[in-house]
Length: 112
Image (tube, rainbow, N blue to C red; front, side, top):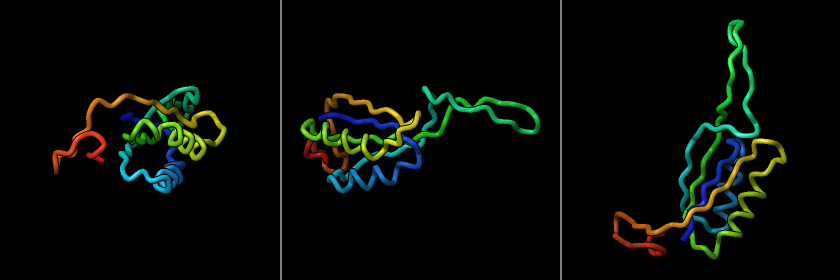
């Protein structure tokens, strides 16, 4: 099992969710996060004072799935979230040691 964390633009969330759903991904965790990278934010002016906004709103999608699906899910997320502009995001992949469904006690693949 592997865990995919994808940090994407907020406006791409619905398209990514729908594409993953069409592929058969039944569960995911979505969080609103702040981050910075090559996009670097912007300088704003409020009441005549400049301020730097270097943490931009992003969406983090977390999905745990079988290793055999990783490449296809990566392709789906990349193709759906890509705008071609700086700030499209990043994807991280982690090994998953164990998963447990709390309600039934099922473990690993059975827990999905």
